[in-house]
Length: 278
Image 1: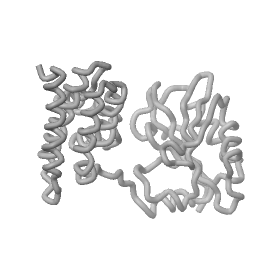
Image 2: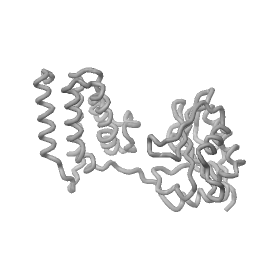
Image 3: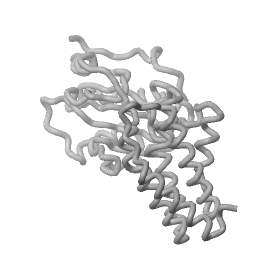
Image 4: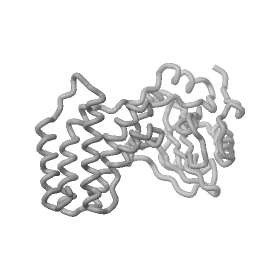
């Protein structure tokens, strides 16, 4: 298959600094022997505004010497004025190099992988350059599927989480309580709300695109550093989860009813003892 290069006129609208970076990136990888393709995902597929980062897949030639960390950083440094870079083990993605370029400052995620690892995938990236067709062939052999939230997985954990958060509120460990409410939104409430709203269920990303009512219920679970506010936010999280669980109406869901009753009772007891239920 012949070399493919996406004409710049087919790129989406984007700020000048994003466009300038992409021009350089395409030019550099085309002359890098260890690389056989470049594709763009993330905001490139939806909305490339001045706040967006660039998510690029650097497709490594399987016939080349495997790229180590220093090799990946060397390629990244050749794309522009690299201010900082680190690998993505904290998100279970060691193939990812998270980069900050500038000036002008620009966040760019570079994922290094061979074409054989393009599947399974959560989105269909746009191929910017493909040396010999390997990238296009690999993408054509699979399809994108973003995992839906697993309601049973959430139900099995949610009431344990409620008890934990209630204990932190009771003890006065409010920073932990505030942080844990954020985890509830990211792991459970946000994905369920986004799934129902027809938005990709990625934590709470783009939750502001939800209908006002759904967004209002989610926002009610946000608490400042205040014991009463944390208590009310946790009650709001429980109410929202129950509403979501009922709306999804999963016939196979095993509800942890005893854990639910005991955890909610524990929270209410703390509320009464501290005068938070006024």
